[in-house]
Length: 453
Ligand code: MV4
Image (tube, rainbow, N blue to C red; front, side, top):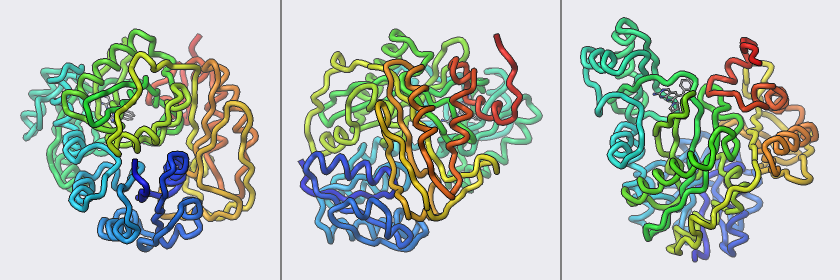
């Protein structure tokens, strides 16, 4: 096991990783930007090193500064958290060449899954169902139209180097496809440095389901069930839950076993998440694989009892995964609400500033993962998420009631947060019935929800 690691991140995930390290008896080194001097991760770590100015490019994305800090503090490993450099194959490679263990998948794993088009064809070969679409990149407008006519409209153009919903365009006919195609290529080039785009049939109103994977360095791979992440706005997830209310034991096993098989075939290591779309007829399709620990990992921890961060660190240190698939049981239900410093009344406008009043919820079935405290200044430079409120109950209904109760206890002021949004969401009949898709939040906010019996 490692004796000292550096956490190349900030906010709640840095705090979460420090907590896991302390429980494992590992010393921690925090890094921070000038804007994060007073952040909780800096206080909780054994050591802390300032790596640059507020702007992420000058601090949390600054590879030379991070490697220098790791060398000065003499750490054996770096945990990247999520975001920033977590899915940067180049960074993983640099760590390796400096004899610092990158706590995550191999650089090759990251590179393979980073190209969403290559990931799609790879997963298809390994037996995962994919949405009908192009074989590899579509180079010209005419080819795009041929593919679309073959698979049928509507279609979606995606950037190979995109992901997470970035650089996607939906087209309903030859005309809109023809007028969007070149722009999509140009945008892909401008945003991701690569013009490659591919085409899939567009699945209307799907649910977003993702499978959590654990894989050690010796080819032992298990799945920890799924999360349902359909509650999102503009590709930002707002609430996640486990298990999915629409996935039964049979479907869970089917998707889980396929995911494990694919991970074994590509020599995947550490934690990973395989995203699927589930359509209204119950068909599922591989979308992309995320090669990092995800924001919503706690809901999986709550229903499996497995500490994903500790497992990540243990596996990276070379330990064997001592969990067998047959030992993994899904117990109860868990929900996570992302509490963002945003004004829900003003179209989710960021609301940074000093937290004067803070009362955190607690009690049975409540977990709060956060870096905020009374007197903390939420800086304007980074992601607006200030806390994750997680509930756990024996049933989904109980998890909802606990979440409603916890939200009613939660006070943050004077900055605005997404707490009022979550209160509205958790009382919505469609959410309670689990009758939602990835379009639900938009429909709820537009107030254009068809009444159903
Ligand atoms: C799709 C899709 C429908 N059909 N692909 C978005 C995130 C990325 N992982 C994949 N995403 C989607 N891919 C096909 N073939 C729907 C989404 C999608 C979405 C699309 C438009 C607007 C909002 C969305 C929210 C979630 C998923």
